Image: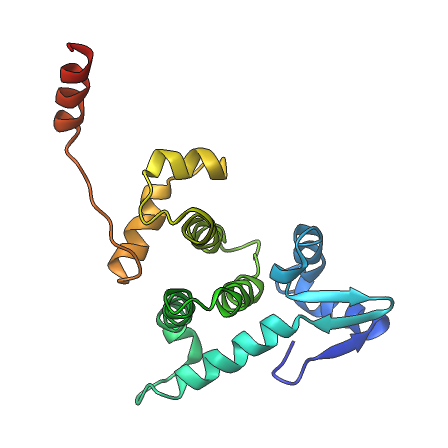
Length: 193
């Protein structure tokens, strides 16, 4: 959509959609997927105007600011993961400082900037996981969560362990594991009482 895209009318939108459909990506499908959650939608429709979500636009600006800190950056895409994790760290810092509003704005900005493409597998669940953990921390002071509890609350069908491993490797969360034999031993001990 180009760096200058902020708002287009319906006819220009159709031209953009046709352009991307020819390249294996359907922006209309992304709009439908995010219709029920506007903060994480990259485009918001107002009448016959298609407007970039302000949270998306601000996230793009933050990504460009972080990108310029890399000395030998050949392509923005090569640093996308690092830049996204940098954004998550900034959001987490806001949360740690008690600025829940900035946390929500930044996380939704990151979510809205990540669209689904038919030729790539990409899940937004990591962002929803952060939001879920943040809400528990803010409302009940929960500092740690059992992974099966998180999986049940999010009702997901893929491995949260993989997401948590990536987040841990990026230094965004602390993750502790227990050997399954220790778990069975403890269960056996508790049942024997």
